[in-house]
Image (cartoon, rainbow, N blue to C red; front, side, top):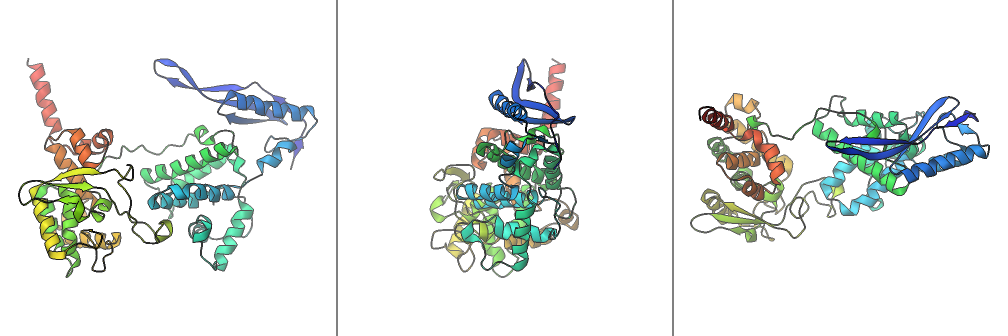
Length: 460
């Protein structure tokens, strides 16, 4: 470690963010100083924290302490800086968040950290292969202690020991080169090609939350992510209009599903119909029960959605099963959502119940053993049905490529039919803002209507 007594302090710099029509908003305060002529800085959320840190630096210089040229810190602050590593912080963060997170959230959180933690390491000899480090984190280190396998594979144990020794101190990310390295890593897939913008954004959110957690614990003075300008192309989340099937195509697909397999396809047909005629998410259809359905002999029916059955890896669920019963997405556990359904779906559900019955808990859609259909099985049946129902060119296109596209087709149909956005949003379980942002480009005829209105105004 190279040290120097040549230290110079500058005044605290206030960082602001412009606001349209208003005075700039103060967002942080930066302490600046030099050690042996090399500029150093540390940013804090409040001026009080910045002043306290600057005071500590001045006091250390006054006491004759040597400053580390690399970090810019005196010996008295170096001990605190190296108190905890990124590996330890990640493990602690997962332990704290796990009880309050859904299985899919747990999976997304650990997937992101399995990319982030191996980036924030020293260049120590004996680094394990990337896939071994990933397995060590996903299958052992980032799981609660009672979910970790016993015994541990020798190569996994070695990888964990290497991570414990090589992991950088938490405060190392105050050097923004490490933050940028993480952002560059999460912007790539495992094969080194560019990840989708939505994937990058999800992992960046996890990184942001972990940094905020470190600030909350006092491990960091401020979130350094805000200092790095790293942007992937923005995405509005709009669906591809080429994926939206029309009613005739959907009916062909639903018929084709019944031709797949001896029983799998026919038992799933009504589930796919719920995704289209009711606009249900796949997890909502999987959780639909007989007691949730009002199916009159004539006219419209009503589904009162309450339970969902999202699918995840067993290690992330509380039950140890791949499907876990939960409430509606982004709602309180006891919340419900009424969804009116047309007579066509009423008839389909009545026939399904008469033919196949329901599970012991009332669920409509399940295997012969009573379990929910796996996502891979559902996708396989749908792929085969597309081969039967669509032309070769359509099969090669994005048209109804996934079962979820049935929901997109449903909501697009409602909007095209003139259903008001608030009503369509309520049925779909969206906010109006998300509804219009995601489906705006799938509302056919808007350009023609706008053109006619502009002509009328010009000729008035």
